[in-house]
Amino acid sequence: MPPRIHLRAGASPLCLRSAPTPNGPLPITIVANSSSAATKRRHVDPYTLAQAKQRKIANEARQRVLKVQRTEALGDPVRGVPTPFLQSFDNVGGSANIGIPITSATDAVLNHFLKPDELDKAIKHSHSLAEPTPNSDYQRDPVEEEEKVQRHKEQHGRAQEALFRILNLVNASQKEKTRANVRRCIDIFGRHSTDTTLRPRAPTNSVLDEGKPPLPQKTPRAGPDTGSSEVQISILTVKIRALANQMEQPGGQKDKINKRNLRVMVHKRQKLLRYLREKERGGDRWRHLVEKLGLSEGTWVGEISL
Image 1 (cartoon, rainbow, N blue to C red):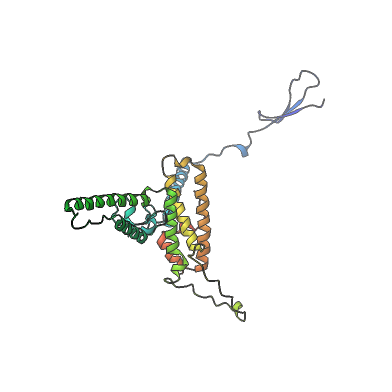
Image 2 (image 1 turned 90 degrees about the vertical axis):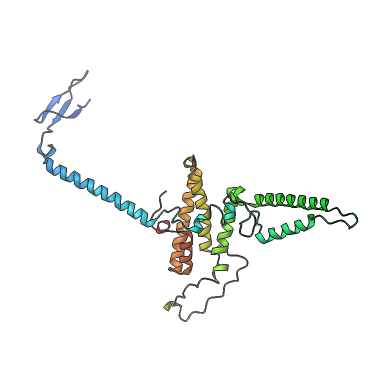
């Protein structure tokens, strides 16, 4: 059996020391010197240590201040900057959806794909159908007719109030509120409406395009625009705000699935914003989208970490 060699830091001289074994020859142990000048701890002035510690504390405090300033300059990557249109997503626009009693549906956003003018027309038609008809002159009882008219008025008022409660989005689910906000975004940011109010992007005169045949004309749009970048960004903003509000509820931080969905939508919106910013180059569409939705630089600049 070959001898075993053990390296141990101990005494000052380098020597060989034997270690006992039950059987066989004694192994050889190497003892190394650990008191060399390279391993000794050098003496440092306490005043120099205190100065270095103070500099470190000042640098860390300054880094924290700069981090807060950069965060405030970039803005919230999820919610952005509060704007009236962005805050209207919570009550789906209009004062009729925040608890105020509804007396008319002309300024309300209704549920079930109904329009205010259609609702008013249906209410007037139902009122005329159920209105009591007067009797002939010899059978006419003014008191009884007055009671019928009053009873019809009360019943029509109760039916109208019940109808407004059914169509009011305050009593709707979050899914229906999101759908109504998506329809609003399509009507506001869709190119079927912005092409008539905003200036188009400036044409690019490239040297490489000279001598080439003109590009074919695009197929006319059929129906409202739902696929452009600005519409997709606005729809994602609606869903992000609804999901962020849900995450702020008690117990919302434990919802791992919705937390991942929020992260995915925020990063998808960031990619679309970078693409639109590169294509529009600060045009009217870009400014209209950013100012209306309150999107700050934090929503498309740098790495977003939630």
